[in-house]
Image 1 (cartoon, rainbow, N blue to C red):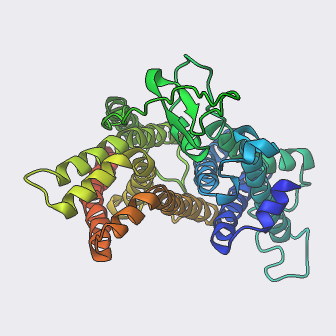
Image 2: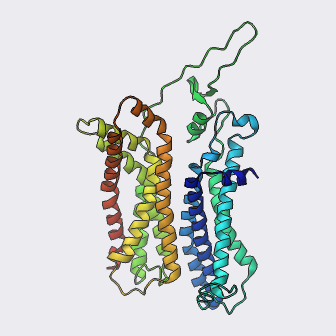
Length: 421
């Protein structure tokens, strides 16, 4: 009930982001049901049906990634001081975030089921009745358990991803802290003390004589280091390009619509390439921020570079996903000059779901980054910094990221289709 109340009482911007998650879940659910319909209509070729189902991994992962980004920016489930006293600690708030994500995805799955049955001709009374009967095997009975299992995949994967990513990061004294614990510590009014332990900001009241325990001395944060994972990202990127080169040698073209015999190799190559870009993108973002501060920077370049370095992981990962999707789309539509058949409706829907989720995730990550540095922005404005300088720093950050990731996207796209030309 609390999750339903928080969902209903949210602001319009939050509701819009949740509707985006529901729309992504609806598109993914329809693609899964479309794969089921193809398998029903072609029982003699089970491998082709399994391969179409495997291609649904990309929109399913994109939907889960978008759901996680939306859950991170949800103000209704953000830890605040005093919530633990009423039973709303980090664990309870994580459960509410997972339930809210599940509700949005279940709504999308229901919409997908309705449209699937409508296009099959099982539900009438609306436009386009039965227009997809041939594509969705309307002459075959629909296995209800299989359809429900496929429709439950987007809610289950998205809610599990949110629960794992937002799980409580509190630790026992002397244990090593997990990455991301500072967000909960700051929200709950805690600060790091000497020795790496976390102590509450409110000091104990002491006994009747007025004695208090000595206050822990705050240690200034260490200089931010470059994000780890860049070498692994380069290795995964090289491996993905090698697998795509092998698939291009054995198949006529890496076409999503044709689904060639080497489609599994193409899918594996793209997954490795995307993983490499996701792992390497934070390091590239950090490098872009470092380069902005070279050669005697002024206040504008210094501010833009420091923000990029501080938000390298938060912004870099969605940028890596966007770079992977853009390079794949550019390779398939622009650089490819073979005789590939035109894309079908399910392929077009899958492309729209992946591209839309990627772009929405990047915008949501930008909103999260803006919320995170709201205190710093307010402090700069109170110190007399003009608003034009803040807007100029944002434009400079965008230009630096475009200068780094734009040529990288074109290079990856060219190397992906080079063996097939």
